Image (cartoon, rainbow, N blue to C red):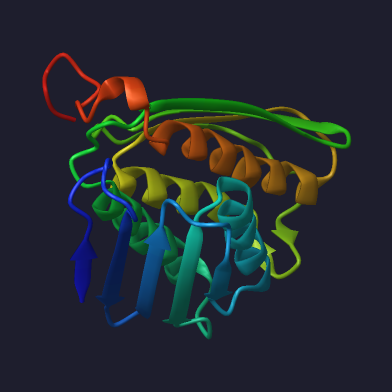
Length: 206
């Protein structure tokens, strides 16, 4: 099932995506003009916590349900959740007419500071400069955070730069990445009244 809004100037900007493979069954829906409501259940507790942060701090309404092969490990569920949520964002944006396009955020959390800058460009790319001193946060492998951000950026069609400038607590490092993404994405997908429905590019499309 796939639904898509007409353009960034239309309200509400919503989309739903279902993805079924031999490894995962995932359904997601987003409302870019929401209130930060969420209903997330991936089977990976810390990932749920991070996606809830994305919704609340981006003011996106997000529903995501995942049934994955967690008896193997968390890789497929984490990556595929990024794929499906990225596709939902891309479809909700439609032709991207009228959006601000660029967004950035410096996000502090106690001793930690992370910077995210992004371009809703249609040219997916991830720069990831984040290191963890532990292999797990809760039950989640820290190496999977990059996999989620890579999958999300590729399928949302955004150029995404994520850099943890400093920090000691691994929970804080991960959480600032998601919160900074939320704030930067909220800024980038906001409708700019001065664009008057134009696509923000001299090419005429993104």
